[in-house]
Length: 298
Image (cartoon, rainbow, N blue to C red; front, side, top):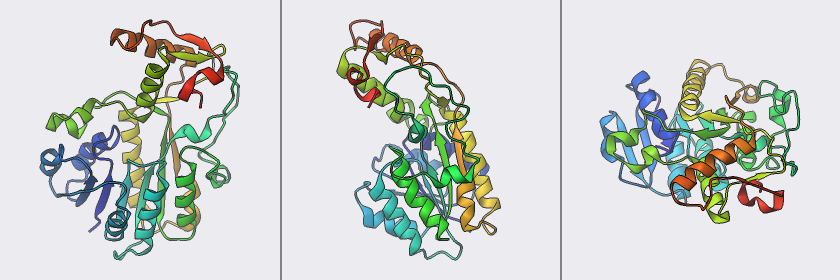
């Protein structure tokens, strides 16, 4: 039987995915690797879950666990190169009879155009995830996730692993399916990476910034939609386990975006939120240059 090593059980996407996954696949053994003990009881209640505690700096442990599982789902470290290297090293030393599957949560930050003008730049489709030739070009020059994506693409192209990517835009919202709700854990309502990144930046600046006219587009997606796509991709991974060919990796990169507000509208929403929370002095966003926008621009 297949066995899963799961990274990211406490995360915005991973915590929601696990409970949805278990309803559909009640019997597949899962090993959840995480640092905190806050979710132990809730994870155990899902059934057939083994919990191993550790950090992402314990590369030997990650390597060993990856070698002993037939499926690795990484929802926790999309731009952590040493973690990706440890997972792939373990996969290369696999002790399971079938070629392992790796489902990796990446991100559309790879495809930001890096314009400093803050204005909308019309493009028919900046990146086409259904075009294998475009997927082949992803490498470390596509920050922040490209370095890890490149390693995984190369491993799959060599026939080492059946790799699949889900690549969401800026993830927002909370999920009623998050495992943390059953444990009363703060992680159930914690902001994801993209939202937290923006909140921290605005508080450091003391205002909510937008660059230039603020008409540049930000691609967003709700966490539950990311989970739904991951479920579909996981099922495809199972369905193609024995027929997957190395070149198929370039046809298994899936972007998840649904909304496209402009940057000024996003800045206004953040400004109002943080003003209500007493974190900044005014809800009104501030027009600034690229260099003055902090991490939002960088």
